Image 1 (cartoon, rainbow over the protein chains, first blue to last red):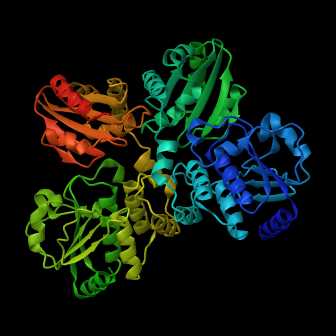
Image 2 (image 1 turned 120 degrees about the vertical axis):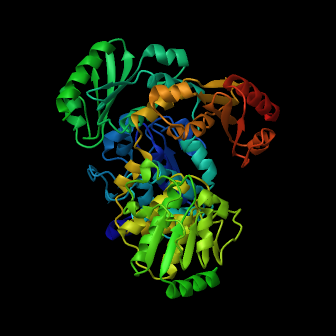
Image 3 (image 1 turned 180 degrees about the vertical axis):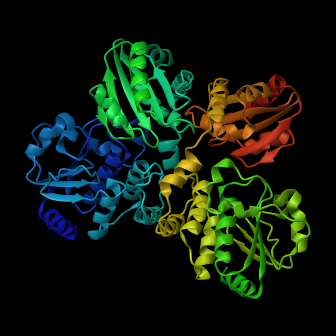
Length: 320
Length: 320
């Protein structure tokens, strides 16, 4: 790893025009890492372009200087492209062609599936977040981490670890965060914006979705559903119910949790979570979906009640 | 503080028979600190009695050797009594008389209101949790912190900081936790037991309580209620709805959140939370209650609908 750090230092010394980018459907780690690293590079007088390939979710709009994240101007060329938190370049979505306009690519990521697509690859799947790696880089390069940069990296790490609850959290994670907090981060504000600020519409939809809770197979399967009618009534969107499938998974008797989202009348998106032994990726695969053993998804082209019947039957085959 | 640490070291060297105790309605910090310190003292061959003055909540029953927490045998005498996480001795409830059977009292706490009732007072309100202070003590005394002790202290700190989200979390908090995680704590298990394991009864009660959500004063006040009939129907208890008042406070338009709990037909317990400016302690005081500016409670001796009307009117006077 130290070789890659050294190569990065040399490269950064050489170049002037640097572009930073991260993945579609941006989360806290992607935005926080990108913005944190970008602001640090601005401080050493590099010409920095930070690109958003998608809209910034509301809860991250409080981040310092987040307005510096801009859309990509077609065909602009860069000496150096830094790609953050992307396991492969397809994660840039329709902006993948940016890579063709960069002379050199630095790949900074913590996903185990990373394809090492960069000229320099700073990839460590033991890191809890890409934000950890950015911290390590800034520390190695002796770059100043001010309060703004620390706030960005804190958000990156706190979101990807579920506030340090997930078991990707390691001793070094907390050590890094202790260093970031020394920069006088406004923790009260961060907690409020990122974790505690629910819209009224999303709360009402959450309550209405919870009211559809059904339990099957001796309470080992929990199912909720969200219909178009429920969305309209509450003036809400699907991403307003983020977290509900994890919420019902955490009921003590439940092994599998399932959410059905009615995209259209005959298109039902299904999210699956399991707790200890069911491989929900294999269940999703039956319906041409995919994912991980504990979290997966698929789409069933059928009406919601038939889709529900199909998925419940399939899950039943996998319960002990 | 170093003087007190030194005095504690001398005292521990002298005595054989040590009793540890914490407060009624035990939380993660009280149980984790007590058990963590108790297990460490056992390891240096002291005769240790760990007393529970109340039942241990279900979610802490996984803690290592938690069964060592016993009821107090009347009139047993101790060389040394270590009182943890108690701002004053009234926090021992009906077990306050234990203090009369101890020759010497050590007071270890982080509450700003601590009355320094000990012969030795290790009190630091800047510590996020009493668990932090126990860590500092074990570190000063060069006592071995094994995986079991680390797990207890981790739970103490994680629960009192809301998983490091509350702004009592300081750089040192994360530094200490990084040291605890080095002891190979099973973070997955801790997260599951402490934060993710809801009973079906509590989930159903939570949903039913959320269904009573009412908003007043341009959505600035959110109110929910739990009646005896709801408890009975779901075979649940009042502490099954811990967290619901914070849940409704976090709606973006809400400044004050209020929960009404029907203890008896004419006895309504009220919990109040505010977000940024309303002093809910002063509202609770109108009904002979008390608490802090952002979290308080009182009891109104009236039926639930009249109690609701009274508290809503009073809250309204305090909204801008």
